[in-house]
Amino acid sequence: MGLPIGMDIEGKPLLQAFENLPKPNYIDSWEEIEGDCGMHPVDIQRDPIAEQAAMNQLIELGYIEKPDERLNFR
Image (cartoon, rainbow, N blue to C red; front, top):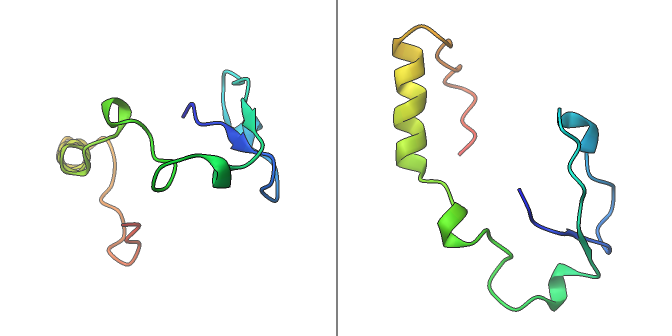
């Protein structure tokens, strides 16, 4: 998603999950970055209402099955 990885976090990025291996950028710590929480800039944030509408359309067209109601990831 283009955000740098904090060197002070535990674990490592799951780069093998990508078809085209991204080259990660690193920073010492997100604790040193000004702002509320290191969110993506407004111009690349996603609209949850538009995403839900797109998901509903894919379900209606039969491309995907409706997710189990118990799996609410919001």
